Amino acid sequence: MEPGVFRGPRRRLVSQPAQQTERPPPLPEPAASTSLGRSEFLQFLGASTTLAFFAAQQPRFARARTGAPSDPELLPNSLSCGGLTLKNPKYIGGGVQAEVYSASVPGTGLVALKLSRTNDDYAQGTFAREKQIMKLLQDNKVPNVVRCLGSGQVSTRDGPRCGLVLSPCTPFARNISVKTGCGLPQATEAQEAYRMEQLMGTAVRVLESGVAGVDVQVLQPQGAPDLTWIDFTEAALLKSEKGKLAVEGPAIICPEYEKRYRSAKDAVIGYATEVFLTVPPSSRNAAVEALTEELQTLAKERKRGVGKTFQDVWAKLPWRCSSFAQQRLEYYASAASGDWAAV
Ligand SMILES: Nc1ncnc2c1ncn2[C@@H]1O[C@H](COP(=O)(O)OP(=O)(O)O)[C@@H](O)[C@H]1O
Ligand SMILES: [Mg+2]
View (spheres, rainbow, N blue to C red):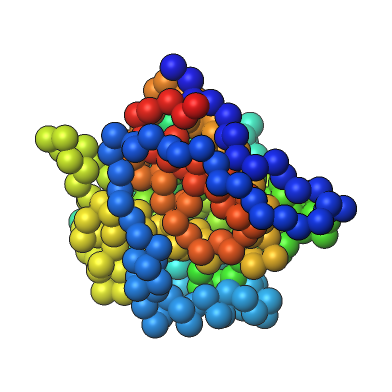
């Protein structure tokens, strides 16, 4: 059975006077629900996240971090990683775990080389886990996610390091995250709607694959609307165990994110909250529209993923959109998270 179409009130034309909207038909109860309450999101937003939220609203915080390489001579001009030959590496950015270089691979083009800062068991485990998550997302055909083309040890002036060869590589991109800002809203409404379609489409599909991102980071290249989700180091993995969903975190958990791995529900709430905070307030209507479309499509699909029962999370966020848009979002979020066919 296929889910039906939302038969709520008609969308009011701008020229029509406002009138009391009818409620949509009652929904059957989904078979399994996350029973997430709206207040849980607000409780979840600890002081650090709230501060980061305010920072995210300030355009001056929205520039990509650059920094400097640990050693300007770290890499030779030609190197190999995972059977690939990389030429002309140039430092493009760094995080807590890694430093990242752009490089060219003959026949493939520009790639990003993510290099661990150390070469111990922890670094190897972290990189192997991130590679596994990227593969999971690729196997599930999640759009706009960075792909791993190869991995292995890289010889550097500082000894061997772990490496991941990633594509696409977008060196001068804005970094969209709770900490760095929401990127650059696009010039026209249609372009911004497209950016939100990309952001929300990937957000929903990442969750569907059983990945609840922690420290979500999305690259927005300058002058191009296409986004790329990167850095799954901290991501929580949802796993189905004996009919229940368990959560698996990285080997070492950063204290800031401790409560994100307590349960699958905590992981999902945290992830959805981060996604919400990367949407500029002026783009919330476009984000809700994009979410609704994606959830409607998802609800019709036969093969569903580990994160299915949590897809109602998107309707619990404080979007403050019109009641029509909110009701439509709730309708399709329930359809996407339940086992029933919406009529
Ligand atoms: N595919 C890529 N294209 C362009 N820049 C990238 C890419 N991957 C990472 N970077 C840059 O490198 C930085 C660090 O990478 P990241 O994966 O976040 O490392 P960490 O796990 O240490 O946080 C990012 O913030 C971004 O600026
Ligand atoms: Mg990072």
